[in-house]
Amino acid sequence: MTERKKPKPATPYARSENKVKKNLMLTPTAIANMESWAFALNLSLSEYLERFGRQELPNVIRVSNEEESKLLGESLAMRSLQDRS
Image 1: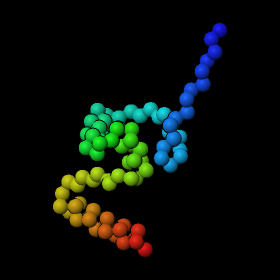
Image 2: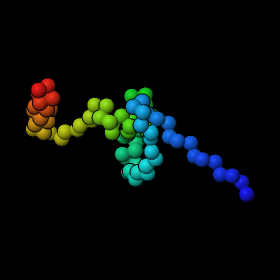
Image 3: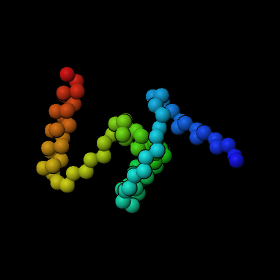
Image 4: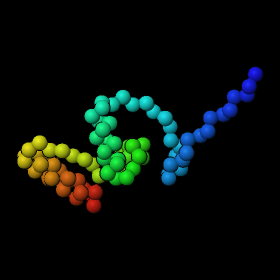
């Protein structure tokens, strides 16, 4: 009988947390978009998702018309003021 080796622990992230495996189901479009954003930032997809989940990346927001754009700008301005208080 062969002895079973213990699995290696996940490599700690910069904040001394261990990473865990998680399976996700995504559409091919979502995967392609995230891979291209990660590539543009010179990151792996895993690192991109880690930073996105930690809110360390700027949010990618798309708006469909001028009115939504104006509302989004006002909302972000209000949030910025609240964060400064």
